[in-house]
Image 1 (cartoon, rainbow, N blue to C red):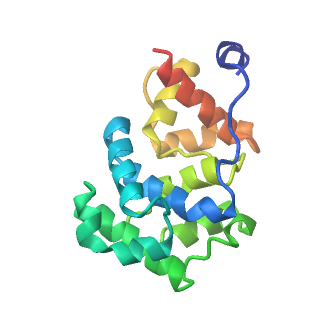
Image 2 (tube, one colour):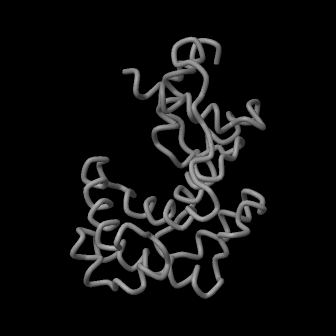
Length: 186
């Protein structure tokens, strides 16, 4: 860890959005899933523009699937965005209180939405809620970075990496951040 700190400086992990921006953060996460950053940014920009610059459940529901698809979203992502908007609107997912839930409860709350899995929920915990003890072992970059930083002969599986994070509790998010930096440095 000392070598990583010396190389990359202090971690830059901070809460990115206020309570009112949580919906927009989740919508953005859905758009960015499994896409190259430039393509995702372009699609996200078109989405925000089509919503008049305001990403809310109401604006998404009013837009509809056809216009979402016209922004460049896949059918699955359009359905996921609309499901998120529906579930927030009907109170199934309550973003105004989500910050008071435990990490596991946040994951359970968010995975009710089509298109949001454990990885997306963990990224929300880490980057939107600013939680310090998230250990996203399903993230390939974290696994590759851990292998590089700790000199492992091969990339560990998610199940193998899980206990390797235990010594870093309650700051596994910080270790994950350094793992991503270790991937970038090559």
